[in-house]
Image (cartoon, rainbow, N blue to C red; front, side, top):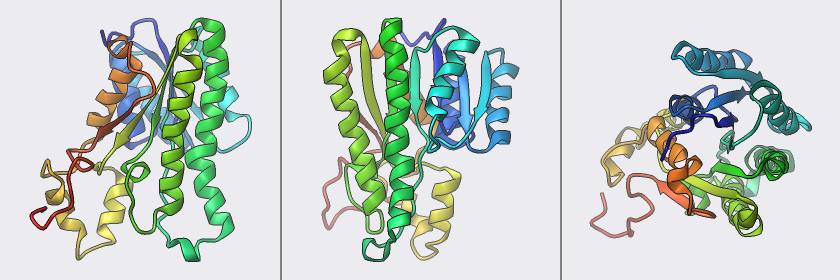
Length: 258
């Protein structure tokens, strides 16, 4: 049911972390992949890793916040592989900063990357999928989109907004064969997460132990959830926000919590 043979996927932010893991996972399941990243070398490396493993992939570098890139990515998928079946809007990033000191420019930057780019990407994908008989949209949200953390007001708001977006897409377009879901990662061992934890020497080292699972997650564990949501195994899953967080959101704050 997770066989993606004959499917075509676009993955944004595919140069590292969750995006690279998802691109590799979708390719292993049989999908042809357009790997996007703002870092051209990183996008090329992901595409080359897929091809080296016997899969089909092309790299298409570019900033997802730039006008026209979403249409270019979708167009590249259709031109190179003939269709578009899966759009994984993964590119994003936090900029921790107290709300009272955040500038308008910084706020706009966070929203442009974490919501506006998802909007434009899914809109471009939606138009092609509607004319092609359907498809699956998977958005990377965040635990910050369902819970709160000081310094992440703008990021959390954007990640909550993309959950609302996939729910609206599911309701509006399910009858036309479109499924839209969000994966909601918890603390995952990525370069960005590690840099943040290393900036908190008094707390960062023990953070993984405070996760109910007792560790940080791995990008590959998010990728497996993306594969599920993109595949026919999730054929009746639409408008969902799937936590993949080792139990973080499930835990009630209490004096016994680790």
